[in-house]
Image (cartoon, rainbow, N blue to C red; front, top):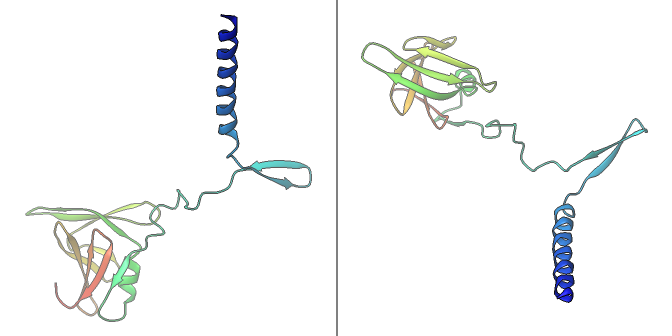
Length: 148
């Protein structure tokens, strides 16, 4: 009876010691000397930056011609919401800093660029100087066209 108790205790100690060692062997820490006096432990950085957000996914600019400055400036915003009714329509845009901007129909977004049409798939802007249209969808793809 004492023999079986001894075997069970030894097996339990062996099992728990293996789990404790397996938790600590894969954590690699680098030590850096700061000001030749203090040592700081650092863990390796992940491959992707979790704080970057959608900054790495830049918007696509699809044009038939070379992009204009208005279309390039409009790339700084992302279309996140649209509302269309009989008497009032507006969209919500977000910039890279996370600031929201709500634009009503026929209101200027940038100088010379105003919102002229809103539907559930896209927003259409008109450039006042050359009567071209900039079409932005929810995938943040921007197209320039002569008509919409």
